[in-house]
Length: 334
Image (cartoon, rainbow, N blue to C red; front, side, top):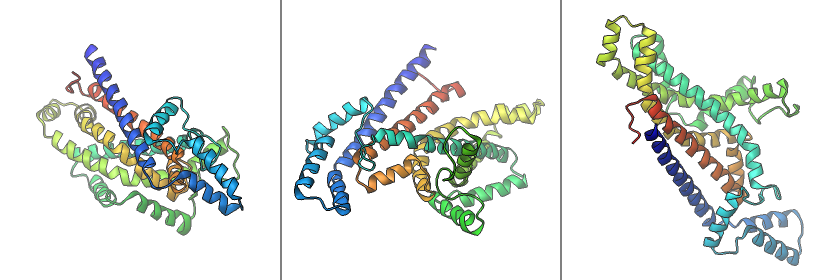
């Protein structure tokens, strides 16, 4: 037990280091960009109304002081971490004066719901069918399933999203193709609102599942194909152990260890895929919010979205890493 606690402590330190480096890199990228957020706001204000030179100068001074863009970058960096530890990254230029973290808090449940659902479905279906295909290589159904997986797996997320958009939005319009819920539905804990959310999430989630399951299927099938030839599996079959027990306890459990490692590595890629998917389907998640923040040169919003995303992915990888010693006692925790 003490060994495992020491293992957890080291992983927590690694988690904090990953978050610190990732957030710091995001800060440097945004602040070294040639886009000036203050000038972006002034440009939009000037296009909407005729402002006097005095009004423009006073607005520029107020925004520069508010966001601290006139200070040295080192000072801005330390001020950023001070605000971040307080949970305040300042107001968003995109929806001034709404705080950036408030916009992220509104969008985060949409992305978490979409990612959690699609990732779990993809991981479970891909590994389950891959294990059965590896254990039953002559089964025609699993052979056909493997052909489909090989054909779909290399297709990018956005291509599948556009195909689904065309099929279910124009050729066979039976599913909503935009938004998070119907415009005529009032948000609240009602069956109508929940049903509308589920209906609008089908196509975004389906685009992620169709592309993602192939990799899990092929990886699990290859692992199981090797494990079924091991001596302990052969001995169990000769000893009369049921096929279900062999698949569950002898094959899938041993094959899941490298698959969990692959899951941790794929989490970051899934987030990049959902950014594009949310943009295609106009889904109100943090992916769409990030694109809007980049287009508007909104430093605060981009940093808020990136910080939350980096932290979420790092935590997910941290949790998967902690499951390794519990799933396979052979994994060293010293």
